[in-house]
Image 1: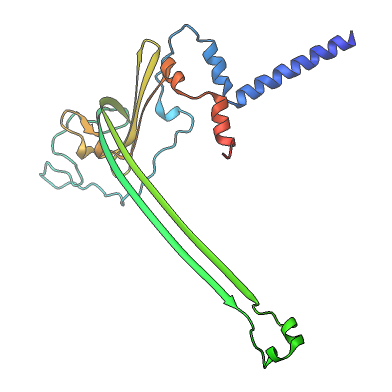
Image 2 (image 1 turned 135 degrees about the horizontal axis):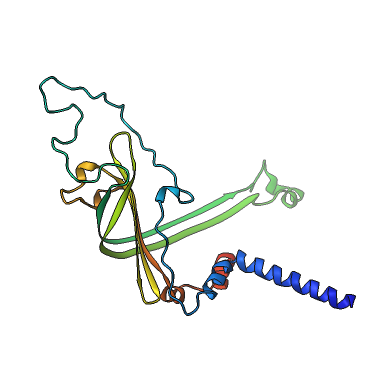
Length: 253
């Protein structure tokens, strides 16, 4: 009976160790995926970006604040950005549309070649008439140091990359910096059958760069962070298995 209990205990330990190892290799997400077999991937909940784990307010170099001053009988206030108030995004919680228009093309080719040959030769051939002395010829070597070295290297590299992404995404103002610039962040999820496409845009914009229709081009976003990807059945098939990824990291060959 004790033998059976010991075997059951060892079996439970082995299963626990297997589960821990599976989670360590990323299997925790696999367990979640197993529970969603036959179901469509779930959309993420709409959350406040500032409450997400890892969120940090943006800090940038700021000019000294200017004290607003008013002139008598004047409709203009010093430091104002515009004369009439408009509906463009300007404070926390306001929305604006980011026009993502990325068309990149890079073609780089490098060719490097280097070669060097060195030779060192030093010794004693005749030291005060040593050649005439028989015993001296046996003691004194003909060459004390002889060294040769040859090195060469050749390297070639090329980059041919083309990227194109055109879409729109609505972003929300999450922070207003002291100089008036806006920190924006937007996320869009689209589910088609069993695949979810994600688009994330974040960065810093100037209110002056926002168009009258409350849109801004992605090329005018400072510290831009744009991510386009997805998750679902198609993405799973395109990814290598966990074991293959681990072997790619560990194997030195």
